[in-house]
Image 1 (cartoon, protein in one colour):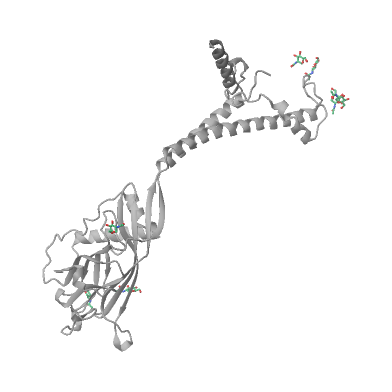
Image 2 (cartoon, rainbow, N blue to C red):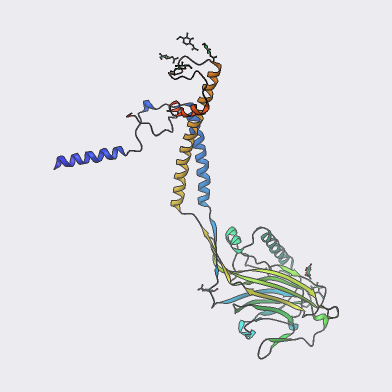
Length: 400
Ligand SMILES: *[C@@H]1O[C@H](CO)[C@@H](O)[C@H](O)[C@H]1NC(C)=O
Ligand SMILES: *[C@@H]1O[C@H](CO)[C@@H](O)[C@H](O)[C@H]1NC(C)=O
Ligand SMILES: *[C@@H]1O[C@H](CO)[C@@H](O)[C@H](O)[C@H]1NC(C)=O
Ligand SMILES: *[C@@H]1O[C@H](CO)[C@@H](O)[C@H](O)[C@H]1NC(C)=O
Ligand SMILES: *[C@@H]1O[C@H](CO)[C@@H](O)[C@H](O)[C@H]1NC(C)=O
Ligand SMILES: *[C@@H]1O[C@H](CO)[C@@H](O)[C@H](O)[C@H]1NC(C)=O
Ligand SMILES: *[C@@H]1O[C@H](CO)[C@@H](O)[C@H](O)[C@H]1NC(C)=O
C-alpha cells in the first residue's frame, strides 16, 4: 500500500513537473547581449510609463449618464426665488399659476420687502463674481454635475452679502424672496402690477387701476432662481442677471425647461433640477401694435426625462488585470521585436558580405556563397536566428 502511494505520488510529481511552464535554465546556458540589455532598459522604461498612466487612469473617475422617464410622479416641486424689482411693493403682485388651476395661496407665500435697487459696493462685487462664474460655466461646462464634481462643493449659498452701507432716501424697489412648493406640472411665475385677486372658477387677475404709468418699472435683478433644494456649490444660470429698461411698459419673459437630475458623485449626492432658459423682452406699446401685459413672466415646464449621473471608478481587480496585461504584453512584444530585428540585421549582413565576397571562412556548412532570393532566406530564419535573445526566450528546451 505504501509503495503504491509512493509510486502514485511520484507519478503525479512527474506529471506536474512536465507541466512546468517555467523550466529552469542553468546560468551557464544564458547568454546576455548588449542589444538584449539595451532592449531590456527600453522595455522597463516603457513599462514604467504605462504603469504610471494606467495608475492615473485607475485613480481617475468617469461620469456615467443614464436617461429614464421620471417616475417620481407624486412629488412636488420647490421653486426658490430671490429677485429685486424696481417698483414699490404695494404696486405689484408676485405669484404662481400652474395648469392645475389650483389656488395660488396654497403654494406658499413670497416675502415682499422694500429694498434699494442699487447694490452696495460689496454686493456689486459679489454680483459680478456670480456673473463671471456664470459666463465661465456657460462656456466651459454646461451641467450641474460637472460643477459639483469639479469644485467638490464650495459654498456659494451664503448668497448675496447684506448691505454694509445705509443708503439715504426711500427704498425704490421691492425684493421678492422665498420658496414656493408647487405641483410638478407646467406653470407660470409672474410679477405684474397690482395685487392679485382670485377669480372663480379659475385663475386670478391683478388689480392695477390706480397706478400711474410712472409707477411701472419692471427693471429687475435676479439674485437667485432655482428649482428643487438649492445645492451648495452650484450657481444657477439666471443668478446675477440684471435687466434695466428705460420703458415703463416693458415685459420680460423667461421660458424654462426644468430637467430632473440626480447626481451621485463622490463629492455630492443630490436630487435636483437643472434648467434651460430662453429670455425675451419687449416694450409694450399698444399704438405700435406691441400688445401684452407689462411684467416679468417665468414660464416653466418639466422635462419628462430624468438624468441620472453616476461617478464611477474602475474596480481594483480590473486594474490588476490591466497591469498584468501591460507587463506580459510589453515583455512578449519586445522579445518578438528583438528577435525580428536580429533576423533582419542578420539577413542584411549576410547579403552585404556575400555581395562583397568577403565572408569569413567559417560562414557555416550551408551554401550561402551565392545570393539567394529573399523568400528562401526568410524560410531559413528559424535556424539562423535561434538563441539570439537570451533575455526573452522562454522556450529553451535543454532536453533536446
Ligand atoms: C421623489 O422626489 C422627492 C423630492 O424631489 C424625493 O424626496 C423622493 O424620495 C422621490 N421619490 C422617489 C421614489 O424617487
Ligand atoms: C431685450 O432683449 C434684447 C435682445 O433680444 C437685448 O439686446 C436687450 O438688452 C434686452 N433689453 C433689456 C432691457 O434687457
Ligand atoms: C427703472 O429703475 C431703474 C433702476 O432704478 C432705472 O435705472 C430705470 O431708469 C428705471 N426705468 C424707468 C422707466 O423709470
Ligand atoms: C569570391 O572570391 C573567390 C575567391 O576567394 C572567387 O573565386 C569568387 O569568384 C568570388 N565570387 C564572387 C561572386 O565574387
Ligand atoms: C580563411 O582561412 C585561411 C586559412 O584557414 C586564411 O589563410 C584566410 O586568411 C582566411 N580568410 C579570412 C577572410 O578570414
Ligand atoms: C572555423 O571553423 C573551424 C572548424 O570548422 C574552427 O576550428 C575554427 O576555429 C573556426 N574559425 C573561426 C574564426 O571561427
Ligand atoms: C554550393 O554551391 C555550389 C555551386 O553554387 C555547389 O556546386 C555545391 O554543391 C553547393 N554545396 C552545397 C553544400 O550545397
